Every structure is written in structure tokens, then in C-alpha cells.
Amino acid sequence: MTALVIGGGPAGLMAAERLRKGGAAVTIIESRRSVGRTLLLAGRSGLNLTHSEPLDDFLDRYGPARPHLEPMIRAFGPDSLRGWADELGAETYVGSSGRVFPAVHKATPLLRAWLDRLVDAGVAFRRGLRWTGFVAGGVTVIGDDGESETLHADRIVLALGGGSWPRVGGDGSWVEIMRDAGVACTDLAAANAGVLVDWTPTFLENFEGEPLKNAAVSVAGESIRGEPVVTRTGLEGGPIYGLGPQIRAQLKEAGRATLHIDLHPDISHNGLGIRLETRRPKDSASTWLRRAGIKPVGVSLMREATGNQLPSDPAVTAALVKAVPVAVVAMAPIERAISTAGGVAWSAVDASLQLRDRPGVHIVGEMLDWEAPTGGYLLQACFSTGAWAGK
Image (cartoon, rainbow, N blue to C red; front, side, top):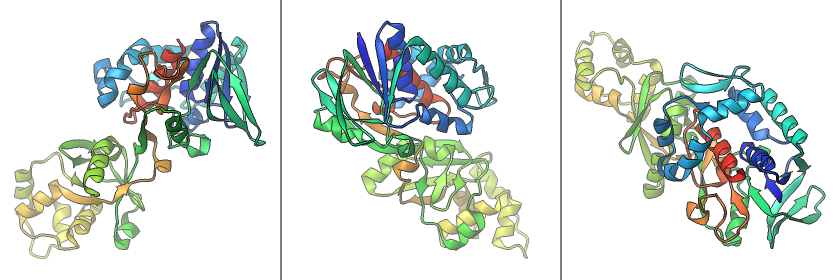
């Protein structure tokens, strides 16, 4: 059996490895001159491969896509991924947050060992070829020189990534090609992305890059604690990324979204109100709030939300501290996102990730319609879907 894997990211490389183990003659087609660049970019932050939390909790991170991904992640889950990395000499450890990293905190040694193993196993590589569509029993590609070519194989795995990594080829340009071929696709959207907020120049001048420490961010009834960071264009960080689906839904429905930030989540509204009742006669509003435990960036955020008209009543002020409204204009552009939501609809593939209308063609990784928070869940699902389709 011959097999083509289109895309040299984690999902594609894993599919190629499994295909080769099964006896297929495998060729990896990559649009760039180097392979595994998405893995190298992920390695800049230590290469968070997966997470160590209980598997049922882990699977819940995939939200509506859990029923589709669950058999694949159970078949090649966090323990399997760690064992695989250990085999490549990239021994892993569990960090204090439960995230799993290679001991060296780099992707290069793992990727180098992996590519060596694939080459030794007989996997072929062709670089500088971009996928342009389907033909009967194969695909068409175009080279850096502009020359088109038709490639045939018994099995084809498409692993072209999402739309948030244009520097390494993941630009989402495949969506229109798939739709033209009759494959149902959901529009790609920025996931694990910041949000855009119209800050005043004064706020930015003083607090750009400042984290809102020990805060809780809420939207649409969901709340996540963490440290959102003020950026020149808005807010970023774990709580913002984790609430991406709810923020996108509000933006789609109303054209705007409102975050509510609790600047003091460890104290109740009543407790904070009592604390604020004691105000020295000469205290400014900023001093009064800082004495109650509100950091300068938090005080300034309250000024942003009120047009610099801070309330003086303790109960009203406590309510504001517990839910500072922040108007979101839009999600950050998709090319600045960590990952994307949307992609090939689950209805378009069968249980083996084969396109229902194109036998022999399988879809893996971020091309499929799922999303997950950061923390190891993104790479895990890419590896798991690649292993599943390859097997």
C-alpha cells in the first residue's frame, strides 16, 4: 500500500509513523523546506505536550467535540504520548500545574530524533510542494517553481493544520479547496486568542503589559480565575483564552461582548463592602481602593469602566470591584491566535476520520472541527488523531 501524508506537523508525522509501522510506503509532502515547524514554535514555551489530570477531566476540555475525540485519545492518550516521547530520548516530567513537558524544555531534540526514526524506517520526504486539490486516486500539488504535479496513492492523510500559523504554512487556505470539493467545513475562527479592547491612551501608557493578578474573568455565566494581561490592543492570557467560545458567541449574536472581571475573588461582596466602609477623610479614591487590596492596575481598570467617575458609596464600589465591565470589540486576528476553532465538519468524516465522500482520504489534527484550551490539550489531540488515522 502507498500513502501520502500532506503536512509535516505533529498530526501528519504521527500518521506517517503509524502508516509505516503498518507496512505502507509513505511519503510526506510539506509546503515548507523544513518539517515540524509548528512543533518548534510550540517548543518556544517549553513544549507542553499533554496534561496529567484524570482522563475524564482531560476529555471534558474538548467540549462538544469530546464524543468524537474520546476514542482516539483513549487509544493514544497522555500516558501513551509520554511513553512515545521517552522512546525518542525526550524524557518528560509533570510540572506543578499538571502540565507535561520534556525535561529539556525544547522541541528540537525530540523532533530531530523523530525525523531520524522516520527516515530510518523508510519514510520519504518531499518539500516545497503545496497541496492544491483532489484528483481521482490522488492529489495535485504545486512546487516553489510554479510547476503543478499530480500524485497518486492508495491512502491520503491531510494534515494541513488550522489557520493561526501562517508563518509555517497553517494559513487555512485549504478550507475553500475542501468546500469546492464538496466537503462540509465550519468557518475557521481564532481560538486561544486575545480580545480587542479600546483602551484610553493614559491607561495604556501606565499599564500596558501589566497582569491583573489573582482575578476572575466571567462571561455568559462562565468564570475562570487567572492573570489576564493588559496588551496594547486588549487583553490576553489563560482566562481570556479559556472563555474564547463564550466570547465568540456573544460577539456573533450581539456584535459585542462584555467581560466582567472580579479584582478580588477571595473576598465576598459584603466582606469587601465592610472593608471599604473605613475611609480616611484625606484618602483619594485610589488610596481608598488600594487600602482595600486593589492594585493600581485594577483601580485604573475601574476608571476605564466608569469614564473616570469612580463611585464613592462602599456597597456600589464593592459591586464594581467584583465585576468590572470590560467591553470587547472583537477577537484578536486569527493569525495572532494560538489555535483555531472550526474546520472539516465531523459529519463529513467517518469513525476512522475518512472523508465519507472520498474513500481513502483521511483528515487529522487542527483541520477537524474541535478546539481546546492551552495546557497540552492541543498537541495531544493532534498526536491522537494522527495515530488513529494512521493506524
